[in-house]
Length: 521
Ligand code: NDP
Image 1 (cartoon, protein in one colour):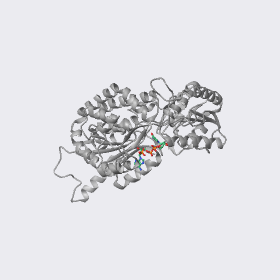
Image 2 (cartoon, helix red, strand yellow):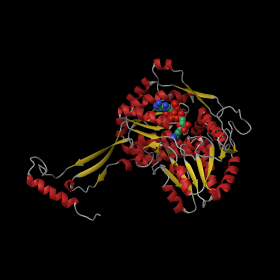
Image 3 (tube, helix red, strand yellow):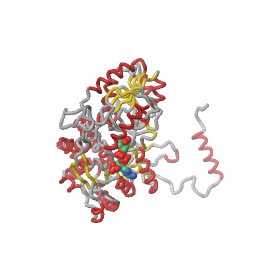
Image 4 (cartoon, protein in one colour):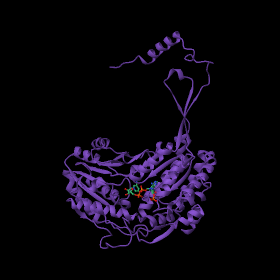
């Protein structure tokens, strides 16, 4: 790990090095410090921005093919080095081997290939047809040009997926990028930046700015566009700061994703999805199932299945494939939030059917950051576990009388990231899905829409602004430029000076002919 840090982290100035002792990185499953990274200050970020801007034009000039070649090499690098990358992710997040393999390596491998091949299709010149008669014969073009230098601020829950998921399309579009990873999980970013360099990415096209919140603040001031993933509270601050320089932002923030289980659902499938997508990655996924509403006729059956499946979860330190189902929590203060939500629910009358304590079963004082997989019932919207983002391995389940109540409660949230609906009647499931206030909704599935890189993924309400994936996921890193090219034309257009009454009347008639016909009520 030390060699990774030495090769990748930019040199801070002497004054900054003196001011910063470096940030310790812990293994959340053991509490041990496994590395230190520099805490870069504003001067270092500004110097990186200068280098990034200097490197960008040559990167852009490589074109889609040249850039795509490097991204495809990186796809292979990631697969060839997957064990090493998984070990790094597991060591700094505490997640399980499988969570790292499925939701980070697989996503990363898919994303490097996808953007390498599809960027050109999303960004190449697009001819536009117009219905405006006066413009007939002219060439209208929508064109995308890279913004220049993109700042990506990443969270700690998916150090590969949530940070590189944004860096890759920004790079594919021809931008230089500065990534500021969470101070909690910087090592994966440093390792991948090394990999990209080994694959031929020119120096300074991607730089990693390790540091704390202040480093993120400095980055917002230094770049042409900010892509932020993290909490809604910090997202608001980033947007307010970016407003000062009119720097565009895209925000992927918190969620409180509801699952709705209708009375005609495949209860076994719904229960499997609730437990897996509520608990995988320790529940620390922006789109994980955070609350469940179950129609009364299948409530008891659903709860009983969820309880059995949650009891069967093996929680512990992941030391290799198949060694644990649910790992540690990545960020120590997050354990306090989970505990607060569970205690608040208990104090207001909820019952804990499984778990409900810090630590792991039988080991409440285990070193590291642990909270037991927990199932709560008799919950309602007076409780924090139903209204605030918990971001932990908890599953609160509420009985509802019908789909109208489920929809009302699911929408009773400031958040609107994702949601899921379970019903064997697909048309009924879809009609409920269409009424949910969420950026994405799955019917008889959950979360996996995220892996469809062609499908936009973004939040409604306080969950976000802009989207990741699809056309919007790469065009946001570009300025759209409208081109109008005239080929055959007279010296002077008829509407130009000097105005005269005859031409004005003729134009008036033309406007009525063009827009005055057709049926209307
Ligand atoms: P934050 O929103 O505080 O941090 C996200 C990123 O922003 C980190 O890299 C952080 O740096 C950086 N940052 C912090 N302050 C600023 C600032 N003023 N300007 C610019 N960048 C800044 O999230 P946390 O990591 O503290 O997690 C808190 C909550 O966020 C969780 O409880 C969860 O609800 C939510 N969350 C949502 C995620 C999602 O995928 N949507 C992912 C992770 C968390 P640093 O880490 O160094 O402080």
